[in-house]
Length: 153
Image 1 (tube, rainbow, N blue to C red):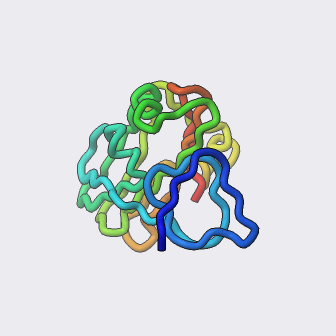
Image 2: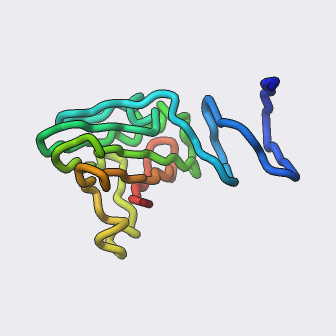
């Protein structure tokens, strides 16, 4: 199959088939899956770099409780090329870990008000170890340097 590069909106009357690769911005709808070509491993308490978060997928296999602090809004916004309205999904995979992972929101990052309104789901920043140790977070930028952070799965 040929590879085509577009600039601007792309519309299809029959849907899109295939894999998404590279940087994808905007709304992506349809069935299928997105495969993360690169991932980051954080197996000890640390501040994630903007590049690690920009992979979209962080794994942890730690036997000890681990806290992952997100980068500042300025650093993360620069790494993602963010502007007001940019939305980015971050997946945390702790299925091979033996203890919980806790996400800490950094400077210029705000825990979404949905988190306070829906305790136990949107507000849950801990990811259990083992088979249920998967979480999806959505990062929504209100400017190039500030974001709201919400657990969405």
